[in-house]
Image 1 (cartoon, one colour):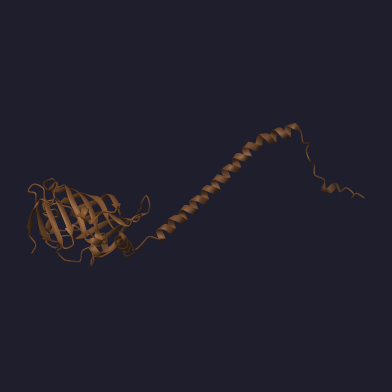
Image 2 (cartoon, rainbow, N blue to C red):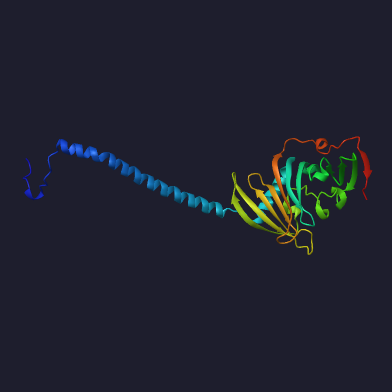
Length: 268
C-alpha cells in the first residue's frame, strides 16, 4: 500500500528539456578545464614541497671536512693509475704569470709518475720522472738526464717556484697533514656535490699560506688546487683536466725516458 503524499516535502523540479541538455554540454568543457587546473595546481604544490624536502635532506647530508678527506683517502688507496693534463698558471716573485701545461701519468701505489712539460715554454719538451726515492730530470735541448734525490728542491728543474715539489699523492689529507682544514663551500655538480676545502698552513713564514682544493664527489678526486702565498696573493692555480683512472698503465711506460740520453748523477 502506498504511503500518503506529504505536500510539505515536495520539491519542484524543472522539466528536463533540450535547452537544459545544451546548457550542460556547454558547461562540461569549462568544468573539465577547471578540474584540470586545480589538479595541476595541487601537483605543482606537491612537487614544490617534495623539492624542498629533497633540498633539505641533501643539505643535511653535506659532509664535514674530515669525512671528505676520508673519502679521498679511500679513493687514493683503491686507485691503480691516473692520467690527466695539469694546466693553469704560476706566479713568479715579480707577480708575472707563467702558463702551465703538463701531461701527467702516475701509479701512486708504486710511487711512479712522469711529467711531460708543454708549458712553460722555457721548459717545453722536458720530462720529470719520479720512481721511488729518485727523480730523473730530462732536458730536451741537451739530451741529458740528471738524477736527484726526491727531496732535493733542485730535482724539478725550476718548474715549481721556491723549490715546491709536485704532489703525487691524491690523498690531500696526507699531502697537507698538520694543516688546519675546513669546508669552505659546497656546490651542486652534474653528478654530485663539489666541495671546496681550505687548508691553512700553521708554519709561520712558509712559502704557501693556504690552499683551496676543489673536490668532485662523483669520483672523489681533486680537480683544482689554488695556492696562496698570503691571504690574497696567488701563488699557483692548477686544474686537473681530462682525468682518466685505472687505464692499466705499466710502470715501464710511466717511467720511460730516452735511453741514449747522457746521465748526470746529482744525488747527494
